[in-house]
Image (tube, rainbow, N blue to C red):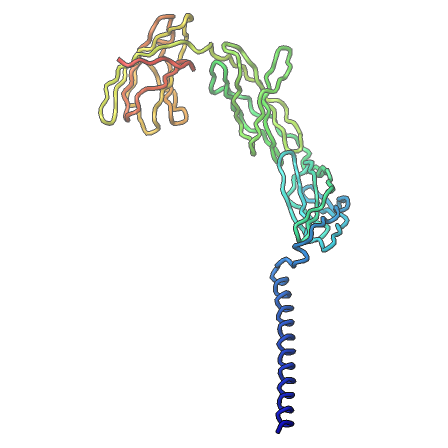
Length: 353
């Protein structure tokens, strides 16, 4: 009986060893499958996460193919102790730029502009995010795609003149590809041109404000267009304009009668300066929703930015001598009474009566 018991115990030990071996092998296979699954899902292996070595710098950038709006670049591949996963590529023009990416050592970049000079750069990244150093750059001017200059802009028109500011507008130049900017020049004595303003918006607008002028001074301006290649148009015909005298000192006495949705205002404007005013415009705050129902002693000119009403003198009250006054009145809808009153650009003091 003892021999039979020993044989049974031996068979149990063998079965137990086989069972443990099978479980161990299954666990090893499961762990291997988990590693494969993690790598397939994009997880960073432990050896990559511990990688702190930078890739070598890519080789010099060379041009494979180029036309007016695209370029194909290549470079010698970087090396890395684990492996390079991608190459970011930058394209910089003046103060603007774009970034691209490729997993090979070449790239084709499109939608560039003819005749522009770009600086291209490339660097390498490995799976741990390490970036190469001493990355190469290439400064490259695209082939010209435009061989025609713009036409001359239209003759400027001064549509708003103050003591130190003039606003100009002109008809657009005609350009076969794309305008880059307009440049406004002051024509000085002897015909010397001094640039006073550049209009850079894209596409450039055909108007400009010229500031910093001297009061009661005559100026002549011309405009020139420039396309993206750098071709210059002929100069526009000149415009000559005289700025207004310095803003006068003024005081306004205001008498207002108001009702729930309207008012009548009587304004007495005094020239408190020492120089006669010959021709005047006045502005005051006036909401866009308000309407002028009647006005006397002045004529409506326009609305400024939908926030101010601008009026001017009539033929009978253009001159205001020092210490003299003019009277005007207004009937209007709304509740915004005349405030922030200016006379020829000078802010008046206002007193209610």
